[in-house]
Length: 143
Image 1 (cartoon, rainbow, N blue to C red):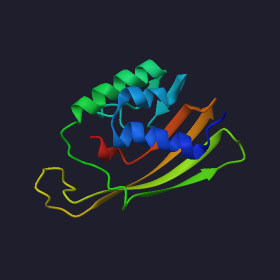
Image 2 (cartoon, rainbow, N blue to C red):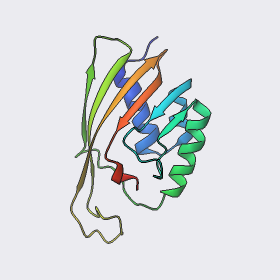
Image 3 (spheres, rainbow, N blue to C red):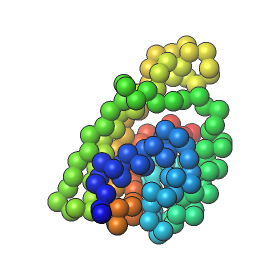
């Protein structure tokens, strides 16, 4: 049975942003899947382009290890998203507003208000998995 855009998106978000599980994240992609963040500078911590499930797994494992101490956890009650289907049944778009509670400066003192991060992701799927993901978010989030 084919998975819906909603199911694919929710699996991807749970594996990545919510649990930071690189193995589970890589499993949401096809074996030859491509994960791109075109706005990210080449020298950023976040990988700009990963090709293949194994590279996605290893690059995201390293990224999650480097950023484990940032203390930012999304507030699901305040965050939201809208999925848009397209004329191509294998393509959908996610508009996302992720809200992080307080401590927007990440120093652990709770000294700032909520931080909202808005982004757009374009998904191309094949056989219920992500074949290509283009993730458009502000590059200063990963510098």
